Length: 152
Image (cartoon, rainbow, N blue to C red; front, side, top):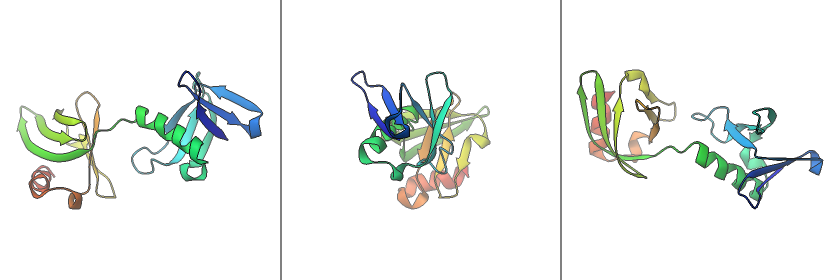
């Protein structure tokens, strides 16, 4: 399998040693939180499965970069750099965050929307379904770790 972007910026995948070429392919992570670079499902424009990439690192550089670029757009998750404040009122918790994409105010309705992962990261999902990645505590400043301890 080989992947590249065509002149219109669409992902094109060539399968079977060049036998079949499919334009407008959409990669989807089977395990986006726990194994983001493994088990990548390739779907055509009608959402039919074309195949599965077991491990992105097994692809040649050009194919891997094309797939990664497409995944980055599909799974845009701001990474939290610090937590400035957390306030709970009327059943909603408001998080004032500094992210790699700027300052964000995030409203979380349910405790289940603050999901710890086995590697120490936390995925925060706001009331609109937008996800934010909080790195493991050892990568955060003391004030941010304090806010996490209070909310945990």
